[in-house]
Each structure stands twice: as C-alpha cells, then as structure tokens.
Image (cartoon, rainbow, N blue to C red):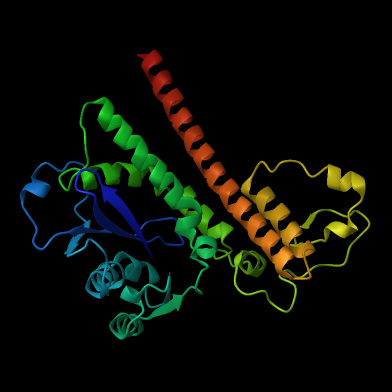
Length: 313
C-alpha cells in the first residue's frame, strides 16, 4: 500500500490516491482523498468511467490520515472483502511503509482480528522494495500525463475535482496490468521470495558482511548461477568474459548484472557503498524504462490487431 500525491491544476490542491496490489497480479480497490470539508454533488455528476468500487474520502488538506487508511483497510481486507475470499481461512500478509496512518494500534488491531500479518518495510527502502514504486507508478505517471495531453488536444483544459478521477481511472487501467504488478513483485524479490534480490536492494547503513553471498567459481565462469541465484565475482572473470557482458535486454539480465556488480564490491567503505547505491539506482531506472517499452509494445500489438480487424471489414 502506498500513497500517491498529484496536483490538481488550477487550484494546486493535493489529492491522495491510496493503492495496493495482490500477489496474483490483481489490484485492490483504490481510495481517492480530496481536499474538502464537505463533498459537493456537482463533483460527481459528470464523472464517466469510474467504477463503483472506488472509495472517495476527504480531508482538510487532501492527505491521508488514520481514518482514511482504516477505511481502505476495511474495504480491501475486511471479512467480506475479495482478499478474504481468496485467502479462505489462511493468513494474509500485508506489506506497507512506515506512514503514521497505518502504523497505529487501531490499524494493527484490525489486522490481527482479520488474520492479517502486518509487515512494515524498513525505513528508506520503499523505493527498492515497494513493488508499486518499481513497476507501477512510472507507467501510472506516464499514462496520466498522456491522458492530460489527450484532453488538451480535445480542448478540455484543466484538471478539477469534477474530472480528476475520470482521467486517473484511464491511466490506472493502462498501468495496473497483471504483468506490471507481477513484475514489481518479482523484481523486488518478494514473490517468489528471493533473499539475494531483497538484500541487494536495501540501501541502509553499510553492513559488516558482504551484501551478497557468492558461490565457488567453476571452469565455465558464467556471470550468474541461475540455479542458486548467487552471483559470481567480477575478479573471477576473464577479459573475454567481461567484454561479453552485453547491454541487458530483459529484467532478468538487469538483475543478473546488478547482483554481480553489488557482490563484487565487498569492502563496504564509503566509496564502494556509494557505487552500490548508484548501481541500484541505474537498475531501477532501467527496469522502469523496460516497463514503458513493454507498454508501448502492447499498444502497438493492440493497434495492429485493430487494423487487421478493420481490413477484414
């Protein structure tokens, strides 16, 4: 669960959108929090394409608070919720950041009574371990800007409370795809669990031991042992093997080269720790870039399919 804040042009007001995803590639029901003391009926009369399961909230500054977080929690994790039916009688694991709206006794008590295991991600790690940060919010932002541009081209200028949710839902449908959601979970090492990815992503105080465990080298000296998920060290590579490290073409190849680089920086002094952070930043950026490329490819496929259907007619 994460908070996304966007400006409403014209009024320059904050709107908070609380989002969440499931390990099966589905999205939770979002909550949109407007800056308002009271709701005004005109805000919702002309709204199109907004599902009925959207929860609208209000606060004096447009930010989330404990009350709004509880409403989101009850709606998505209560006894009659979709996640409860999926889990049956099993426990559910809920990952979230350390925002005060969901680190309080009311929130945690509800989790316990509903057979939810609450797990707060370590401080300053959500940009590495939060799946929404890794694979969702970049295309989300891109699609939102794209829809704004489309609206301007139709001479529909400005964003207000009356049309914000409509524009947001179009961007949301294009971003919260099963492939994007599962990509974020996979590339943060959360589903399926990959401790090497998790450890390599965490940028906290330098640990006393190496970030990644390494395996014994073998005669083939491959860059990455896919069976054990343990990267080998660069100092075991020949010149030819280093020269053969091509530009990654997939998320797996990005992950492989990132882990090799991180494992090879072993002293953990300030310089090497800085290099580790830069490498991780570049890997996150590359993953986001690939996500956008995949979205473009999906759009191209859809256009080709539409063109083929038109030609048949």
